[in-house]
Image 1 (cartoon, rainbow, N blue to C red):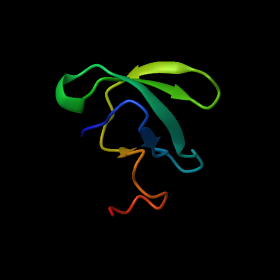
Image 2: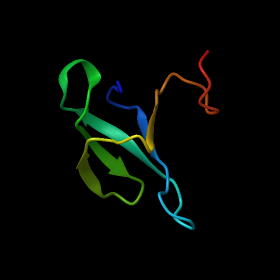
Image 3: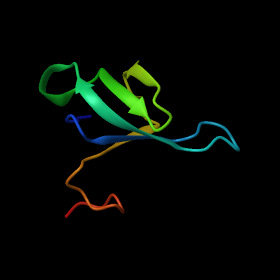
Length: 69
């Protein structure tokens, strides 16, 4: 997984009824874009996170549908 400051992190819900959450990556702490990341959710909460397989990085220059250009 590789991310840059300003990218978005989509975290899929893990159980039925749990919604996906989207956060902005505000700091990359690993080497060459690797985790951990400092993220900020829309409600203002910030977390330090090493995303698992239930997460996807949406690069800021990628289209909204998540498909590569």
